[in-house]
Image (cartoon, rainbow, N blue to C red; front, top):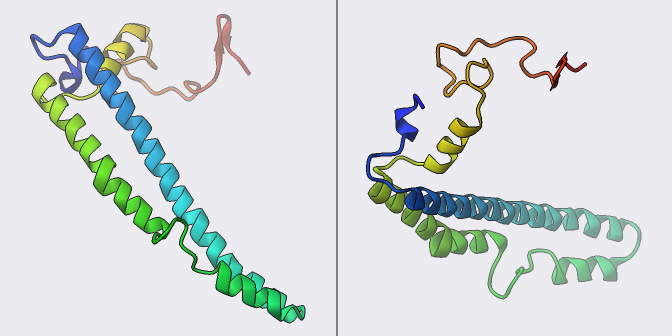
Length: 161
């Protein structure tokens, strides 16, 4: 493996690499969960603004009582007691996400000399085909020669088309 930033430091055990890989995977899952929270935040906000249109359309259709109910009962309503979605995202970040990121970073720093993704780097090295231009260890590796058909699906008989 030619990528020193992803080479296992001397003395780091297989168990440590696997444990840090698991911790990293858990953090990545947390990143996805956080992304879903942002989607929840944006979708809920979009729905709230669409309620303005619904109110106007209900009024225009002569349904003033329904328009007023939507306006007073739904527009700007808390999604959970005392909270809009941005407050949920902020609380998640402050209470869970930042602590998770900080602990994962500290574990990598102290247990692997700051070298992250060792598990994945070793997996990549074990799974790549040597001397294949699309299986080089790094993009700047001398064996990497981009080819126009490198993204084509291949079969044992050659490129599929």
